[in-house]
Image 1 (tube, rainbow, N blue to C red):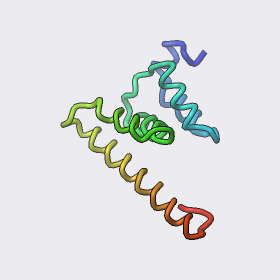
Image 2: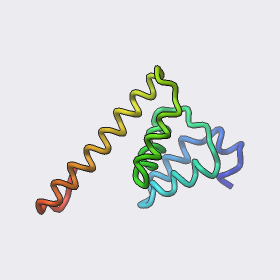
Image 3: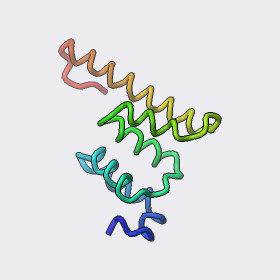
Length: 104
């Protein structure tokens, strides 16, 4: 089981890499993290979870990065990543409104 603490502790990044391959990766990543509570110690894992959360709730994604201390450099990186993601989504929506089929 993916919720076995021994597996989750040692293979969090690999599990998230595998979940990211699925078409519904955001939902799977959110469910994995919320169910198993793995230690998200790698920046890539934190980013992946935060952006997966942003897909369903930007407010929840913002709350996630706020859990880190203000002076933590990882928090600054997460904020930059989240803002870039949000701006890209807005830009793609704007481009789509003018008839473009694909964005990025």
